[in-house]
Image (tube, rainbow, N blue to C red; front, side, top):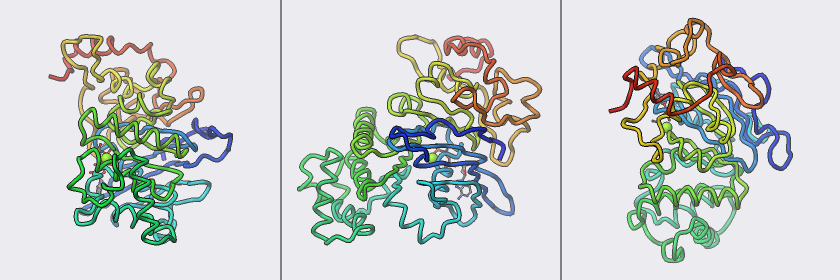
Length: 358
Ligand SMILES: Nc1ncnc2c1ncn2[C@@H]1O[C@H](COP(=O)(O)OP(=O)(O)OP(=O)(O)O)[C@@H](O)[C@H]1O
Ligand SMILES: [Mg+2]
């Protein structure tokens, strides 16, 4: 892969002082064969998640966030080729037999899928579905599993869980269904929870409630949490560390505070400058010039260079690896020499060039 990490990224030592991170992804690549063509949707993801840590994965639509995490869990379609390494508690998952992966998924690693509502069966009560998830991995009676379902609904702050447990998904609001999906995901006390856009379909107030439920579960259960989102605001409020993904690669990785105070990749800078800011009244919102390249038709050199305001000739030739810049990581040739970042300045520069959102 092109994005080599020279030393372990932050998170290699977790909060409890253990050396091996809960999840360690190195050089993950996912290629697809379609109609005789082969293209890569994920071109090198490197990521560590420590026990009890919340890591945000941010990037535009189609950048490979979902495919990358699904591949890490062995959930890819037949036309996919997955290479690289995914170690969970020191155990290699890439190439593990499907039967063994099924034992790990839903038990030690749980995933909330991007379209969570389709995870619920409309003709089964919510309680029966949660109980089924429990019985898939634990030897308990039906009655015990239902009692656990009530406990889990209580854990995700669903009022009157004893009554709600016997209702069908259509009797729940969208926000409550999402809570039920979260309850199901944590039913078997996983060590790691991967939540793929867990709040996208919900209104802003419910989004905030769901994120706070997730966060409090993460703290209470000591989970490692991977939060996939296209919303930097979600990352700012809820993650400890962030990996920014562009065209199937991690281009920057840093703690949330470092990333927002001093972004060291031009793509990250563009993303931050695009966040609407209520305090600074701008006539028009900033948007990054151009659009991401189509898969299989990546430009030479750095995939971001055609859109980059700092690009130089070298950027069209050499693809910069993700490299250590003092305990944080960037895949920009000029990571350490970029000018100081002011989002308003970037927006103004872009206004001059006419690259703005309507
Ligand atoms: N089974 C598949 N076969 C071929 N291509 C696929 C397959 N699954 C995903 N892709 C392609 O891989 C790319 C990355 O998709 P992915 O779903 O990971 O994007 P994403 O970053 O999660 O985007 P979003 O924010 O919209 O969810 C897309 O171009 C998608 O069309
Ligand atoms: Mg996705």
